[in-house]
Image 1 (cartoon, rainbow, N blue to C red):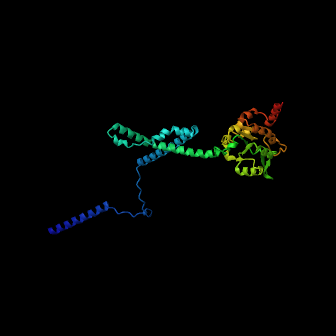
Image 2 (cartoon, one colour):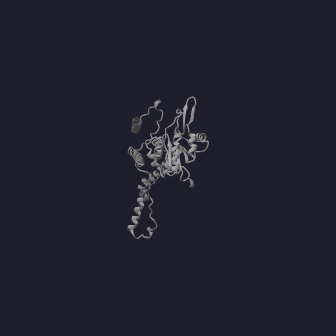
Image 3 (tube, rainbow, N blue to C red):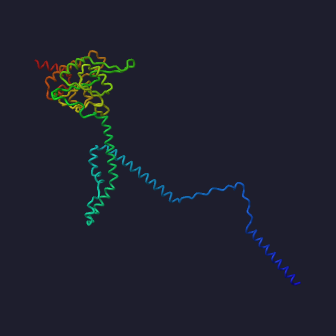
Length: 350
């Protein structure tokens, strides 16, 4: 009886223990609820984010480099512009010569020979470091000089006569001969354009007699600011007897202040024996002392005799051959030369 009671108590104790264990599992591990349909998608992994301090420092470093570069380029451009405005090329070349020479410094072979002299070696190394630091400015200056030299050469080809000696040397037996330089438009000819007739060229009255007669005494040259494509065919038709020895057109003129000027100093002739006859002589020539003004001509003036009227004066100059024509022309300043010459001739005869 007692064993039966003891067995029943043990069984009830074990069943109670199992029941308590099951209840604790239910409380500590509750069943998971099923996921909703909208939560079935898996979100992508979030990329790692760089530290904010490192990103800001990189941005500041790039901004500093960018603004430094822009400032350096702006300063270099401003300095180049001022130097171009204020100084000639040879002046800048002379002023920057020492700077460019400093970049050519080298240690030399004598450093090892005097290795015991510490001060000498330090001096050499300091000079070498200085030349290394000056290499970039020196190269920049050399680049500026080369670029400016190239640009000025290109500009000079448009603004200066194509040569310093526009004419060949005179023959020894002709060195006493005077040179008569003639303008073309409104001096020997006049050209005009109309809607009906297009371009027309008119020959000035007396031009044939003028050229043929004075070719005996002068070296005759046409010096104009027209283009070659216009000058050559016009003179071929105008000068059928080849009285004009040379033709100079726009490339032989000097361009300044928006105008093309005749530069008689480039003719390779003695300026004391050069006369420039033009309807716009004083406005188109750089040597006013050699100018012989004549009335500008247009085709409406059919009775013009200005060229023929100049023949006596020009022939007299060629025959008397003054040592310098410029004082002679200065004595006629403000006068109509043909009329004044006739008056002086009559007075001399009396």
